[in-house]
Amino acid sequence: MVRKLKPGRNPHNQSVTIAQTYTLFDGQITQTKSSNKQDLKDKPQTSPDLFTDKTTTHMASAFPIWEASNILAQRKDLPWGKDSNGKLCYAKDVENGKGSVYFWVTEDLEHEYPATLAGAAALAVIDAFDIRAACMHLIYAAHATQLSRPWEQEFVINDRQIEDYLGLKKRTDKNRQQKLSLIKEIAQQPCQITTFISWPAQGKARGFTISETRLWHMLEIQHHYNSDLLGNKELIGLTFRVKAGYWARYFLNEEGRADISTYCQTGILSKVLLEDVMRVWQQREGAARLMIWLLFKTKVDIKHPLSVRTLMEIAYGSQKIEAAKLDNRLRSKLANTWDEDLLILHERGWHLHFHIETYSPEIQPLAFGRSNHSRPRSFFEQLLSAHMWISPPDLLSQKAIAQDENVESKVQQTALLVTTQQAITGVEIRALRNKKGLTQRQLASLTGLSQSLIQLIEKNQRTITRENQEILERTLRDGGG
Image (cartoon, rainbow, N blue to C red; front, top):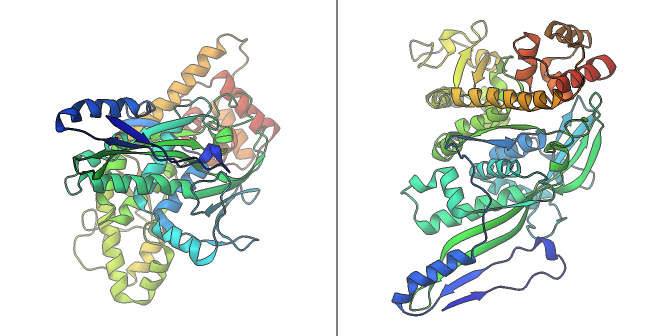
């Protein structure tokens, strides 16, 4: 027979209880098969699978999502400080200080408004963060896009789906129990981050403030067990019930995009990227950190070169860079690690282009420009001052362009139902943008349109839909800048 044991719910917080469902199987070996069928029947229905084309899926890509992924990947290497209450927090300015986003950490996974941590307790949580939890965070961001109102609705995923997304099915170095233990640990870590958002008005879009709330709510974890004839239990599965925090009301709201009252900022997540991070993180953590950061960075800005110093701070932290400045051995070791991490990116499809005036062949990696193992004197200072471009793998680029075109197509279909008006040209948009002193990236942030779309519009390589025209005119003629 099948016997289910469910612990009681917390009477003080019924809606955010981490419950456990124990599915135990008793009886003869001949009954095991039918019992397993019952176990599958008892498991909750999961949300639709991601990566239906086996390659990519949409994901939320708003600024808070990007920074939370950095927290999970870069941990103590970020500039953590103290808030007014002495709690450890990570803060980022928005629009040159007009707004700000704050993050804290907590050990409490149960309550909707958990107590956040200070001092050594907070540092211990941050230090325990696993870069693989950043992959889970991205999976959550993708599942949230499947919902029409993710700040109200929940999604359900199980260990089998997660195994597939992260490429764990292919791993033979971990047994089933080890995989389940890892999945449970990294599934909970994104839910240990809380955030406060003060977002400034941008053009016609109103500003807003979101009180401190969880980034992700872990509403329930179900544990599924099997037992042998001696009564020994074995964990055979996990199911997670998760809901996005209130940030989604303002950054993942398709309904509010039309009147610019809210945003719907999405990007493309590659299954290969998740598998690459899971594959290289232990030996090449710097490369894994860069892949996660570049996933967002290349969406908002692919035109301007990146500072090598900035990239190295993301990959290794500023403390390692400063230490290398004072120690020749560390300097050489860090430079070699950097070259090897660039090679890892290249091997996984990222396109590297060196700014020849600042990143000369004699300091480039051996696999690219440098012809011998020696480097010139003061190479490290030159390296930190160098610039380069890193473009995403072709698949990500193609999917991102297709996403913009799909959004445009939907808006065009709606625009056919209304009276047309004189279209503004790409040349006029560029002139108005320059007049206001805005970069394409800043205009993208103000309008909610992607930077790549604005770039194509200004080159007259994309037709401007009526909705986009209204958004651009409101921003460039009436406000913004």
